[in-house]
Every structure is written in C-alpha cells, then in structure tokens.
Length: 488
Image (cartoon, rainbow, N blue to C red):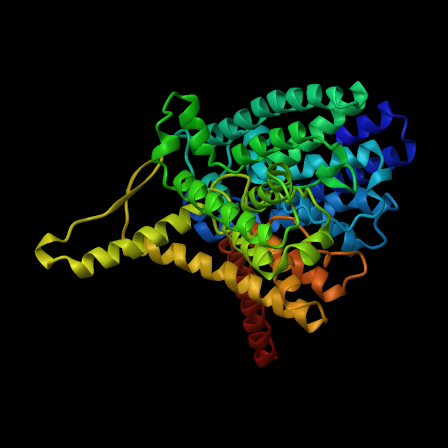
C-alpha cells in the first residue's frame, strides 16, 4: 500500500492518504499477529503436503482480499464491506467486474491501488511472495501450484517466480511507454496519459478489464489505442512458459504449442461466426466498426480481459441470442494455463479434442497398430487417459459453476441469456457485463459471484482443499468435544 500512499501524497489527496495509512496499519497488525502465533512452529519439508500448499494459497487469498478492501471501504465509493470485498476479489482474480461507484471521480491513489491489485493478481500473490518477500519457503512449489500455476521455468521455485515477474515487468515498461505516446497523440496531457497508460497496461496484461473511467476502453475513442490493447492482452493470455521459450529463441514453440493452436482456431472461428451473425442484424455496417465492436469484444472475452468497446446493455439489445451464446463460449474457454487469463483454458480444450480424436483412431485401428499419442506443450508430453480425464473434469467444474450462477440470476428475475452471460463472465474471470452486475443487485448474487471468481481463478483444487481442511478440523474438534463430554 506504500505505492498508492505515495501517489496520494504527490497529488495532495490527504483523505485517501489517511485511508491507506489505516490500511497499512491494519495489515501490519494482522501480519505481526500471525508471526507471533506462528513463531516456533517446527517441521520439515516432508511434513508439508500438497493439501497444505493448496490450503495456504487459498487462505492467503481470503486474508489479502479483506485487508486490501480497507482503502476501498474508507474511500466513500463503496457503501458496504461486501461491495469493497467484491471489487478487491474482482481485481485479484483479474475479473474486472465493478461495484465501485463514480469511477470517473476516484482519487489517483485509489485508481493506482485498483490497477495494482489486478496486476499483482495476474502474476499471483504467492509468486509475489516467493520472488520478493522470502528467501526460501517450505512447500513453495505446492503453494505455487495451489495458485493455479504449474510451469517450471527454472529448477528452483524462487527462480521460476522471479522469471515470471521479470517477464511481466519488462512488458510493463514497453507497453506503458507505447500507450503513453499514443495517449499524448490522441490529446491526453502527458501526466494523465502516463497514468492512463500504466493503468490500461496493467489491466490488459493481467487480462483484468479494470479502467480508470466508466466508459472503459471507449473513453479513448482511438482505434490505435484499441489495437495496442489487443496486442497486450493476447500476449498476457499466453503461458509464461511460452514467453520464456520465445525469449530464449525457441520461436517454433509459438506454432507447435497446443495452446496457441487452440487459441487461434477458437478465437478465429468465434470471431467469424460473430461477424456473420451480427451482419444479419445490420448493427455494425462496415468492416472497421465490425472490427472495433465485434472482434475486439470477442478477443477481450476469449482472453478473459473484459475491456468493452460497447456499453453493457448493447450486448442485450443488439447482439441477440446467437451473439450472446458465442460470447459465453469464448468467456468459458479463456486463455492459456499458467498465464494471467481465466477460463478453463485452451490447453484443456486442445487435450480433450485431441483425446477424442485419439479414441476415434483407436476404434478404427487394429489392436496390433495401437500406439502412444502425444501433445506438445513446451515439450512433448504423453496424452493418456488420466490427462484427458483431469482436463475434462476441470471443464465440467467450470460449466457447473456457470450453470449455478445462471440459475441464481434467473431465480432473481433476470432473463436467462443475460444470467448466462454474466455468470460465464464471473466463472471465467472475464469482467464483461451485460448489465446484471450493479451495486443494487441481490446480496446473495454478490456473495456467489465473489465465491465463483475465487473458485475460477484458483481452479477449484485449492479451495476444495481448504474446505476439506476446515471440515477435517471441525470433525476433529467435534470428536474431542464428544469424548470430553462422554468422559465427564
């Protein structure tokens, strides 16, 4: 919180500065309390199991969400703790849905905080801690995987985390500079252009969708600005392992990787179908408007970025059921594994599709010609039934999560297509809205959306492990209580 505090001081925003001082104090007290109670706890690396790594990662996200909500709540732009927690979880999970009111008049400090959260959340809080805050952590890899990442760029976990941040920070400098120059060219003041460039890059690279203005990407009225953001959020949706390979001159990986193939096939197919479908409705009459209003939003949805080049209600009024259905598919598929993107990932789509082809070939081939099948993801890997099954199971979990959200929205009276759109956006950590997410939406929907964003970002296993640990602890406590009562 020091960075937004310094921003507040530079811009002489004294009330926001006080908000962040309160936030810093609360975080320090909470952290020191944990250190005091945790001091002296012993154990070896062998004592730290996968369930512990998953539970630590999942619980850390919850603690951080409540602590980071303090400046939101004190800002006066969120009337309740629930709304504040919603926006922080939306930022951390790189979703981008917003309940904060009057975005156009936020302080520079709070805007800095919002976009920092989505940038940090894209890389991951565990990755941040492993890179900058600790020398060595027991079970580091288990916590890293618990945050929804599994790529190993270097032999050590700290080295891998450092490479992820190195990649992101280099792109941060380059992308911000490019957007800064473009912002000045379209008429923004140099200081304002810089802040906008920084905020938009952080959201685009992290596929987060936050913007400093209510109009989102439409505020800039520039096809050049929009095109640059497309480039950034597509790069942000790619696997960090792919970036690492490209930087080390393994450029064939871009063509060979099953994820990039899956992304280019599905994004191209959905874009073409959306353009054809909406051309029948004569909404966007020329090629330029089709690119800016259709292709842009499809790519934003597919990469789970959530930048919108049309207003939320235009999806409902202009796109029709066919267009909404395509957007739901794009949002659920999402970007790449071990990237800043959400969704059930192109890797799993590619594995399941290739697994289907493998089963068809096995059925049509004589038994003596059966052979092993592989897929390429950073390296050649065996395509076996266990990999296909686990991929299909995660896809099913996302579909169930989205279906429950759709039913909940329909229960509260929202049209089914709009409920499905918003629920897919939440489950896939996208952030595009059709108008359902508002400060006055039902409380139960806010709570479910927070939980769905959390589940979708951590890809279920960590949260399930945390819930299992809590359940196991409660059962153990119940048994001890029952035994003591029986003895008495």
